Length: 224
Image 1 (cartoon, rainbow, N blue to C red):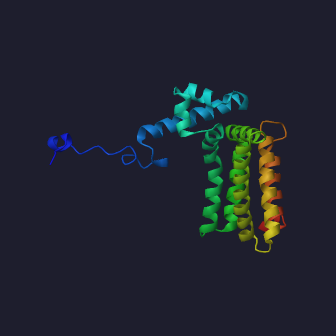
Image 2: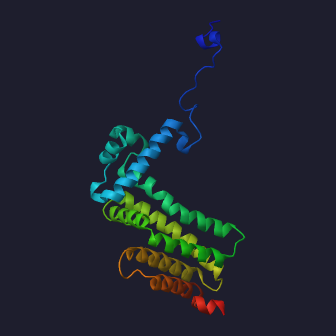
């Protein structure tokens, strides 16, 4: 019987790259994870600084100091890079909504917390800029448009479920309409960031209107 070099030296045989992969996303090894994270970080920076016109796979690869083919190993298309940049942003809302529906926390309290997050994001220049750059891509790129629709659909369904939990008198159809309006209001508020129109009074009116849509009454009326 033949004895391998590894057996004679007492070393363990090498495993395949798949077997030796780490436990990170997609089973990538540590170096692969570092490269992937670098790509996302560079892509986010380019999108913030240059906008959609300056954003391409070639530009991302150049600034990440890797080849285009290496970048495409991790993200085959430009929308795939965009998804990786934007997913953490939308994931925070989806995770919060899931916890709200699964947790013992009052649905009203969770809904208030999510409205508060929407306000904070509307005041966050980087979050707002990234989101609207992505929306601009969706207007011309079918893959981005599908991704945007997918996110909005999931967000609307989960938010509608929370609206019904907070106000059981709200019908299934009405909760869908309310959720759609709440999301539209939050998007519109983000567009006002940095203008003279975005004031504390506007933020307060957003919360008041949101409460009216959900409960049929203002925040002050709820407290009575």
